[in-house]
Amino acid sequence: MPSSRTGLPAALAALGALLLGCAAAYAQQEGTSYRALAPPQPTDSPGRIEVIEFFSYACPHCNDFYPLLNGWLAKQGKDVVLRRVPVGFDRPPWVNLQRAYYALQATGDLERLDAALFNAIHEKHEQLFDEPSLAEWVGRNGGNADKFAAAYVSFSVNNQTVQADHLAEVYSVEGVPTMAVDGKYVALGDSYAQILVNTDQLIAKVRAARAAVKAPAKPH
Image 1: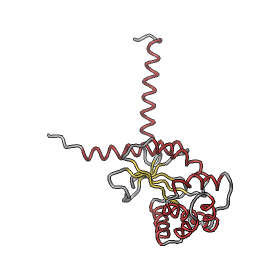
Image 2: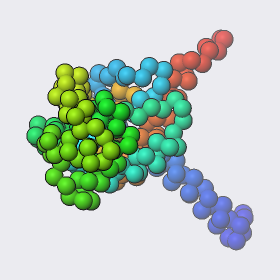
Image 3: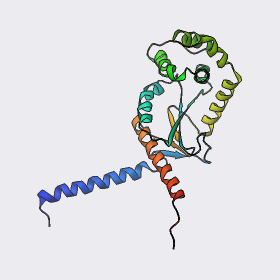
Image 4: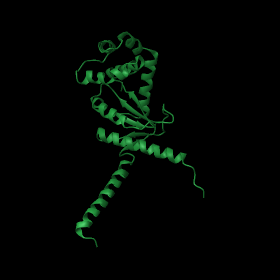
């Protein structure tokens, strides 16, 4: 029998390993860390693992989540691609900000003004909830207000907004931010950090499933 001096650390290590194993198993349980989509949905990124963030510029939680999301994204492999989908939830200010996202994307100003728009709404408390206010803000921040206004009412932006609403409905998105993985899973969690951890686990799950499909069959 090992002495208490040597046996206790070994026992604690074994217990730690057991708890980690249980935590990993718990984290992979459907309904605890993720929700499976039925049926699975097609993605816009064949050959890569597409992660969707459903969000709104109007949402304070999305504002808090934004820097964490960017930090998470910087650590992802090349096989992972992030697709952001703004939601409207039939709230006129939110719908207007949906259109703003796609208009900024169309004019090439999204990357430069993305964080700034969150900051203007939640830190500076600017009332940017209609097209005139948004266009004026874009002009003040180095963008082209006329091009933004034209894109905002374009058929393309209208179509993208309708598609975003449909996607949020298909994924049963009831709150934001929400993270979905590969058209198959929605990550759950009680904190932003937990949602991102569960998103990583779902990415690993998809990778493992793809690797298993690609692996050659063993001869009998």
